[in-house]
Image 1 (spheres, protein in one colour):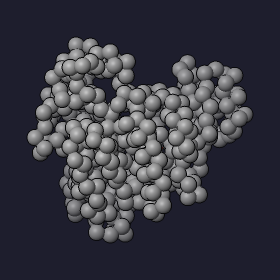
Image 2 (cartoon, rainbow, N blue to C red):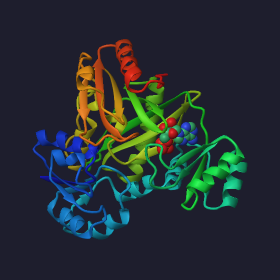
Image 3 (cartoon, rainbow, N blue to C red):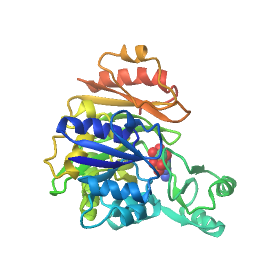
Length: 369
Ligand code: AMP
């Protein structure tokens, strides 16, 4: 059984690594000759919109999935759909919603999931109106193609708003209120083609400059987890979803406020490879292939720290007892996710002590709440 994956980044590579023990084969589509998945599976090189490759993949594969969301829904619909074509999982409407921050906010509102106050901004006048109606401080973001904090500017004053408009304007934007959150969390769950669902424990996430730095799980009181599962369930049911879906939240005065969703395996779930009975990668594959979903039971108190911009000396990292290193084999570049490491400990106290030591070296200035 062959799974076609659009996008051959680290997420795709970890999907393939999780799928081989199940007897699955993989083929990727990625424009880059250096795609991380290329070390573990065949990669067809072409644009994500390449009609020939998309047609070939959807004819030859059992199912098509993707490892990042900035791919063309239009091209998928046009070239990869048809009676004798592979199923596309997760469903394209979920992908289309996650690609547009405004569509995402409307979905949250429609499903009664608390989210930030926001206004769409398509002109200078609309920005003025948004500033008046939502207030300051806020954040101006591109509606599409934003990731890892790219395409967004924090707005504290009207002057900053004007400057951000000069830099970001020209494409559709969204202005959101700034949430002075106590912490950030995310929930990851999977729904299979049979309608079975599973949910992982809540992740506690720490970002710096819009990029995820560290995750700890299980995190937070049971009530947060219950609320997050309820919100995620509404989204899964709304789309008759298949595969892994993630929602990120801010926590403010004990309330969860949805920030965004990702229709794919997620960086905040990397700890599940070593820290859960079944990883998010394996469960994504089981879900899209209609196989029984695996237990999401945590095997301890896990932490994941991202390796960004550079990979420190292997010797130094591997000296940490119990540390698991994942090097994605990417060329170093400032701000680029190159790998991650995971710890699974018997107690949260020991896990946090070791994580603080790791962060002290890898991301000085990043503090765990
Ligand atoms: P995003 O690309 O929307 O996930 O934003 C990346 C990170 O920037 C978030 O995880 C937060 O740390 C921060 N951020 C984004 N939007 C807001 C907001 N409205 N209020 C506070 N922090 C935000």
